[in-house]
Length: 338
Image (cartoon, rainbow, N blue to C red; front, side, top):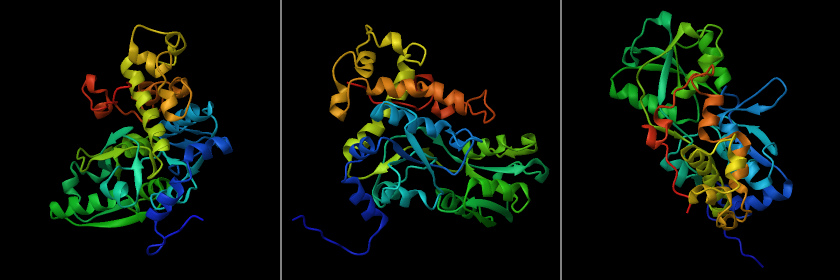
């Protein structure tokens, strides 16, 4: 009979380690779909359309994982989570992974017993204000009321920034981005603060986005990425290397347009290993040789996903910046497939 040892109260950390031992990949395959935790709605990153179909940069990661494991990028069910509810949802097994704008930090990784599978967007916290406020710098915000989402890294970052600059502010707590947008537009707060990408996505939904400006200061490092539970290395490896496959595909020139042709075999051994025509990397994950080919085919490589959802030609209008490949002046980098 299996022994159970209980030490102290049940915590998020305890839930996480317990659920992970069940074998997430086997669970996902048995039920036939991936349950993915996303934001409550952030245009360009994760948001449902009028018919309830989810799309966005983070959603694409979920679909790539589903394609790798189940062979179907549509075999995903999405669970909207707030800054407060996301970690409980993951720890309890309500979701199989989080693919929302969650920052990789020491305490989330170590104390909460989660595992970040990599970084899919390098970000930093910024500030958005109405142009009519006449503010050119975050250091001019002394006495401002600031809308801030609870349960996020932005709370501590904000407190640190204002303390370091010897200025004061009045927080206006919010639960979701939609609530923050509503409060900000209604004038309940002078300033909205969150990750700069989130500010761009939020401003893109405004009726008159030109009436608002994102201030120049970026006050933190916010490496955002997919998150799984500790203790299930097979699942963690699968999510990590699915993300790496999307990044490596961009670097190697594998696109949704040419992947079928390249899958016939090339003179580049790394392309062959990724697409399954050489070696058996899939077998090491407990999958077949075509897992990465399916993941990339689901929505294209990293560049295709970025440009389609949040790139300069979209309403969100983000440039690659730090999220360009390391070979193009950014810091995006995948370990080698060998």
